[in-house]
Length: 214
Image 1 (spheres, rainbow, N blue to C red):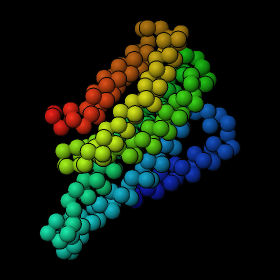
Image 2: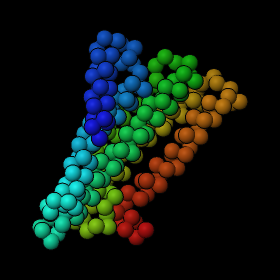
Image 3: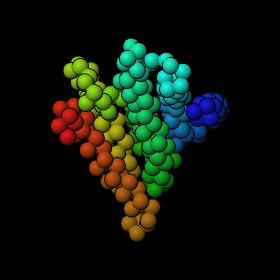
Image 4: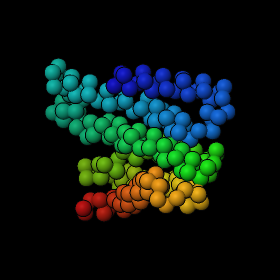
C-alpha cells in the first residue's frame, strides 16, 4: 500500500507540473485519466491499510474492532474493504478509458478529443460517484432501507457519465476515415461493445431488490 500511495503522490505532482507549464498536456485526456486514477488510489489505499491493521490487531493482540463479543462490528470490515474495493475497479479502468479516448481521437485524425470537457467531467463524476457507492456490494448484510436506496440510486447515476463516454467514442470512430479492415478499428469497437454489455448488467444489478433476489 505504501508504494501505491507514494507512486500516486509522484504522479499527481508530475502531472500538476506538466499541466501548469504545457497546454498540450492539459489537452490530453490520457494524462487526465492518470491523474484521476492517482487521486482515487491516494484516497482509498489508506482505508484498506487501516482495515488490515485493525484485523491483525484483532487476530494477534486481543483487540475487538471486528469481534462482536468485544463490542466490535464485523460489518465494519466489509465497509472498509469495499470502500477500497469498489474504487479499485475504477483505478483499473480509468487508464483504459483514457487510452481508448486517445486512440479514438487519433483514428479521427483529430488533435482534440470530441467532447473533451464532456469526457473530462464524465471521468471526474465517475471518480466522485464511484467513491460513495461501495454499499451496493453489501445489500444482503442488513442495510436499512434508506441506505440501500441511496447506494442503489447513486449506482444507477454512474451510468450517465459512462454513457457520455461511450457515445463520444462512437462518434469519434464512426466519423473517422479509418478503413474497416484496420485491426485497431475493430479493437476499439470490440472494447466499446463488451464494456457496454457489462455496464448494462451493472445498471440492472444496481437495484437493491433485484440484487437480493439474485
